[in-house]
Length: 377
Image (cartoon, rainbow, N blue to C red; front, side, top):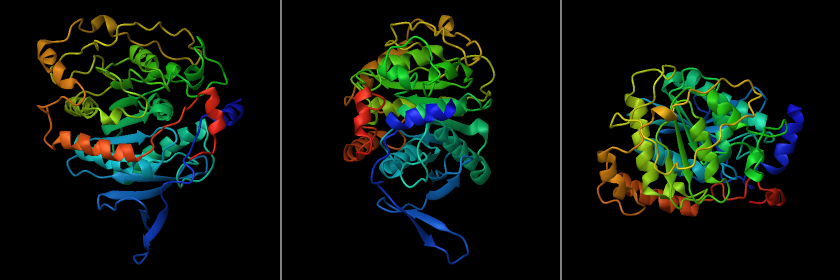
């Protein structure tokens, strides 16, 4: 049945850019080794270009952005209809302003990665990228943060559910499952793909959820229900007015990410210890935008462990220090940057410029009429 599922998914769920936005060339073979370079993107000394073999036989392209100030590494799984060439500038900006090393990769069949895309190939892809981090760059599991955007939340949660010492995870416009994006089903079916709703309770590290309230591709309810089901919640970010592909343009996006990274970086305990993650103020807060309590999922036939419900332990009100910052969180109105040693306001402006020139996940992924768009650029 797994083969059938992958075949069905490939017909409507995967939209690799055609043609790819970049090529990979061998720059120097004089020393007996190969140095790869991506074309059509600015060349940077702190960026490595790699080809990594997966257990499914594909050879995927990955980039590793080094930051000498980093103690943590972000493994980024991008959204649909995007490839590394389009994500390259964003990856470099995130590495710089979050002070992290960052690895991004193209799924099988995306960009210049070989093979054909499928759900299970994406699982093999993220495993290969993660293994490269550990074996080639000496990263440790407890210093890795997984970041999944949209469809990328699928491989991200699959891997996160199997790593016992993972530092943290970020879910950016995530999906409950492929079928649930199209139809409001109440149970999980065997032919569904990316069953995130069944895997989220297996993740024991701190989880940050980011979702736009005006998302017309993956409704914000997906992010809110996943956050409710998290074992170890971190204050979520519901971007007011944010859609599916523009969250990076909002100033609160980078500010909230910086706060999250700082919190997990300063946290000395391992993720498998109990207790919610504390932010700068030492308080675990419930987002004021989470008014609707999602119903607990009853379709747990993947033998998920019972989640530890932290909702009763969450603070019912936001502390006064955070209330004083509330007005500063509105889009475009921030005048006093907080925790911005690298001038993140300028970074936001740079994000806006490059994101407007790129096409990131701008398709109706998973929608029934989206199937007619297979093969379009």
